[in-house]
Amino acid sequence: MKFSDELSCSLACVAVAIGIGMVAWPVASQFVPNAYSVLASKLEVNLSAISPGHSITISWLGTPVFVRNRLALEVKAARRGRVCELKDKLARNANFGPSCLAFDRNRCVDRRSENWLVVLAPCTHLGCIPDVTSYGWYCACHGSCYDLSGRIVKGPAPENLKVPKCVYKTGLLIIGK
Amino acid sequence: MANLLALALSQYFCIKPGLTSWTTQLCCFEVPKHANLLYVLGGVLLFALCLQILTGLSMAIHYLPSAANAFESINELVRKFKYGWLVRSAHVNGASLFFCVLYLHIFKAVYYRSYIGSRKLVWVIGSAMYVLVLCTSFMGFVLPWSQLSYWAAVVITNFVEAVPAAGKWIKLFVLGGVNVRDPMLKRFFVFHCFVPFVVLFLAVLHVVFVHLATQNSPVPNRLPLHDSCVKMFPFFALKDVMFVFVYLLVLCFLCLVAPNTFLSRHNYTPANYYVTPTGIKPEWYFLPYYSVLRGFESKLFGVFAVMSALVFMVLMPYTHENLSSTVFESFYKLSATVLFLSLFCLGIVGAFEFGFYSDLVLKLCTTWCLAFFLCPCASRCWRELKLKILKQSW
Image (cartoon, rainbow over all chains, first blue to last red):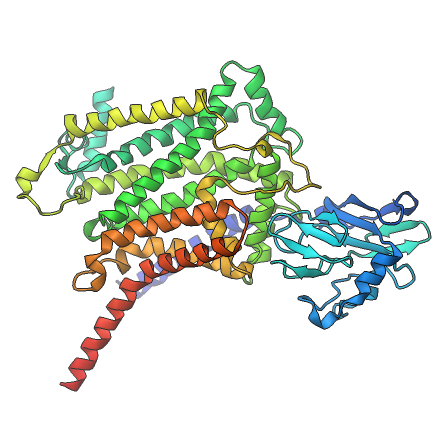
């Protein structure tokens, strides 16, 4: 094969590759949503409806969220354990820094309202919704147990339940940015 | 017209070396006399695939791929249209029966070593089809948007997330959003309708390559070749047809007498995003994979184990090609049987909650599967290493 033939052959190959890429890229990209479809949204929750010791499940951006009004007894129980014994030692709280440790006071919405606990409901293992129990949460899918602070104590889940960005005003909770 | 078509096809296939003509291939293809009942499963599978496509397409006419309407549309098909219940039942039970026959077919190929020599490509195409069929059936399982479908989708997409580096991106690609909702349902519907035709195309290729390579026999080289074979038509073609009827009989039994054998009550509850039903488990044909996936503490290891099992399966013709003069050869058939028994045990373990004994069984069975795939490789490497050392010392 002459050099000019080789050159034109390889040029043609490059052109075809570019052409395929230009078709494939948008076709493949349309599977992924763009930034606008995952808009941030705020959700206001009236807390006066939740009496102490109770918990509700609400939907925020399609994800279930637990809002739990803990009894003083339960807060005390949650603060009794030692962080160094936990499986996941980070607070996973969007309101504080990412390196915050999983003390119960770092898991609350803010430090004045220690009875309120707001966590994203999906189990950090495989996304099932745990059941609310007297000692915290229990995920029936694969047996993960979370304590009264939403921290993983037993089972396959790798992380504590996540705390979303939220603001507490007396009697009102605003979830989201 | 039919003659013209046959002529065109025969001319097309005549170009390929080794194939005489389309019609003579069908009539005069020679099958070993020893071919037992396990050898009819291929034909039955082809029929079952066509039946699934037929019932599936007729369901697709009624189905609405949206989270709000999917469950109700299936319900309407069953209740408001003539024989809708039969079509749905045939599709659902047909899928389970299809996998039943498919696993037996794979067992046959492993047991009689039909994957070596000139049939390597047959095996590789077959295993590619198996992976595609697994994906298709999972997507089909999600479509009715029942409790079980929804939570199966949630759990499996969370497993996908564990893939290192690309996991988050693949998950976004599959979900088309943050949660398991409409976008995912729509793409699953499209792929569930489209992939079976790819499988059908591969099935035709699979058969063509079997015809190119001639058929394997359960008792190789026992008789002189001209004596050990009979014509495909009418002997084995009729046998195939007979077992297609047996398949239909079992399917009829399932549809008409026990339509909910493979279903639970969660299949009849619409998806609820706030409550996970207790005791969820996948369809029975996924159970071995499921028990391995959840058996590992880390998700990554589970995903890695399942992926490597599939890769080992595809590579089997190359790793298990030369078993002669290894210890493994003498008890190959026994170990292949134990492999399938251990997969069966894994399935049983996957159906129940974890305990001490199930964990033990899981570990034993996984070890056996790993050993089955890796021992021939290891022994071959060992032999070659020994030869090398011997050569050097001389």
